[in-house]
Image (cartoon, rainbow, N blue to C red; front, top):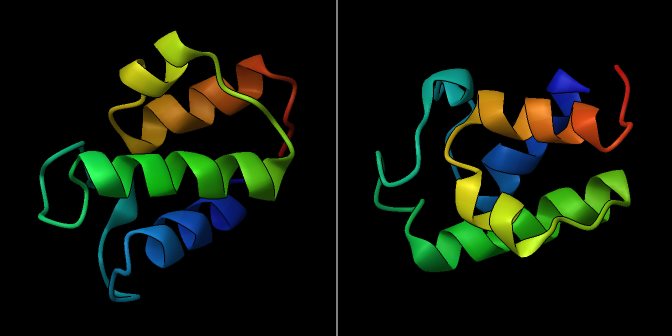
Length: 77
């Protein structure tokens, strides 16, 4: 799951492949603003066929949080 999620972050936020995605936090980079956040949420939902609740959308502030949320929704490695 981590590799797939990493690829989603890179695509949705239009990052260079060498960016350390796992250390990123919301608003750490210009691309992860409110618009980028919604694009990232939509891309994660599409890739993993899940639907986040509003509270989860608001709370997703890092790669690790996204991993934990996906696990909570039953997505496995």
